[in-house]
Image 1 (cartoon, rainbow, N blue to C red):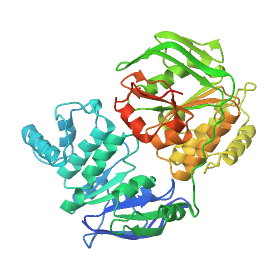
Image 2 (image 1 turned 180 degrees about the vertical axis):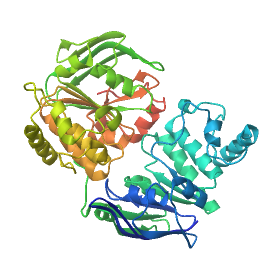
Image 3 (image 1 turned 30 degrees about the vertical axis):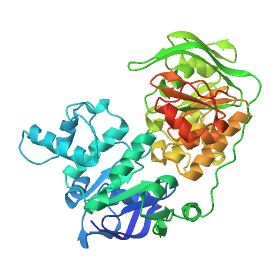
Length: 497
């Protein structure tokens, strides 16, 4: 299906989110949409998929003007959207999720639905049990379910919003393999991303948005890669090279684990012995659910250990609460920014006031506003003191989280510090984290991006099904080696640091 967007404008108050966008996507194309956070790419795709209404402009599908007033209307027109977090119902079975919003009898024919699922799985090489529950699936498998459901509902245009965020390398390879079959059926895929390497591997064409405007397009020449330098310059108006590797390891133990064991409902980690030094960055690599999150929360006092001892700066904190850890210079930044890290409905000023130590019985509003102005400037947050945190982009929410950290700190524990962020935001976030290293903090972080782990870590711990490797020297480790270990291979010969 051919897609044409003509003269699209969208305003949110004074913010001109989409400014006269004109874009034509031929049928059967895998089209990349690149742009930094806040560039307007998600807004544009939400207009095409019926979540937002354009203030001006029109949409044409196969040359015919269409009015897309809702996501349901978009699906009827053949446009489906695969969100970063799949829109499914985890407590229900796969087949029940598949039957949602299908037309027909009051009691749908489950046998016929199971046959349709099996036919689609055979066509795309998926392997799911229709009777299993969605909450037992990985993110990648939930994406497969959503792809099948949208195909079943007649989608001929697929919008994928940052689909590689939070999935493993193997799951990403499977997703790309699936999408590359779409052009054979004249299905158009629109791939929204900030990752140049993903666009390079998958897309035939790419359009770049910056500050709400379409600033450039590029089409792949036969057998040739895209000009990445040119794409980066279009995205940011300048080149944004990765920061050079920097090591700040200093004398002194910050975190020491002695025969530590920890477990949750699904996973057990046994007898971990490990030490993190001041100024050191430790990357935690592994597939989602392999134990990294449990490990970080145990180091923060959010999950109690079931064996061994935890020491922070030689002080035994075993079995203590998170507040005791926090008072001893330990901070934890969760991946779920709005669910666990920030408070929706509160302004930036209110967050900074809550994060500071209370002085007196009453909150001084003028002092809070001044503090907010200072932090907003220092962390380059695109917002105002009265901005509600949920109104900020993902990158600005992450900067806000970092700006709430107190000084000094002994240990910073972070889940996915740059998930979903553009290149420039990634570089900025890590520049701020490295400043903490200079001040003597140790940083432990988990990430699904192996390049990020290798780029910013001094040492690496690999997790596989509750097993924890000996620390690896990041400079002597490759993506291929990490990929093997994450998959459970090569554990006997890993080099240690």
